[in-house]
Image (tube, rainbow, N blue to C red; front, side, top):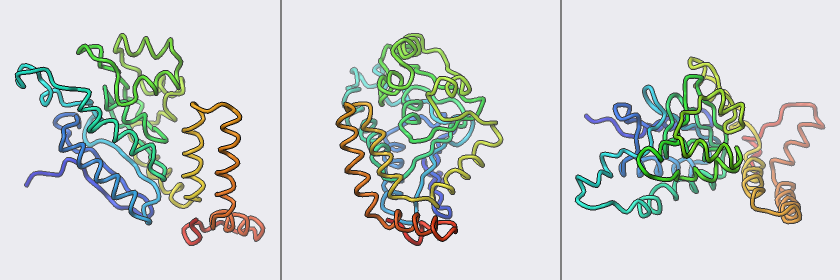
Length: 265
């Protein structure tokens, strides 16, 4: 029996979604795209899933697009890669960004091409020290996609963004963390334990506040200060009316741990 290309594991308060094409370094195919989108949608619809971990099976996180599916010599014509982005990658990036729950990416090995950029679309990126991030597009005559030009420029600045994109050189996980591209590099053997500990912590936290925080921070790069202040005002108004806030204040005043799962907003 053929294994599914995406594994979906329910835990106490969070889900672990694993890309499962290890023989191809979890490279994207149409089947993988559809399965991953379905897994994220399942998490979105599940009130008991309050955080999400995405990782890869085997020795790599994701090698990007499976080029065997996009070989012009076999297809008889040049594929419309813009349509591929419009149909699969761009909706996936937006699905991750718009999910009202924290998304942790545990990068367990190489993250190349669109695989690197899908990882960077997640809210918190943890990477094994042996992992590397590679903007491999220039090696095959393409530009960074799946948000690559945006993530690199926003987080690293134009100089580093251009150098990584033009050379296609690997960026080690520890350097990626030092530069602020990802959250943290951890020892390989500790990666999943750290991701699961963080997911459990977030799953026990104020889910409504997390969703609003995610929304505000993602808007900050395109807003003028005045617009961001106005957005904070409106989102804080919403947060202040939530059961999360009521429970948080009550717990503080009563000197007890807050129980946000019981009082989720």
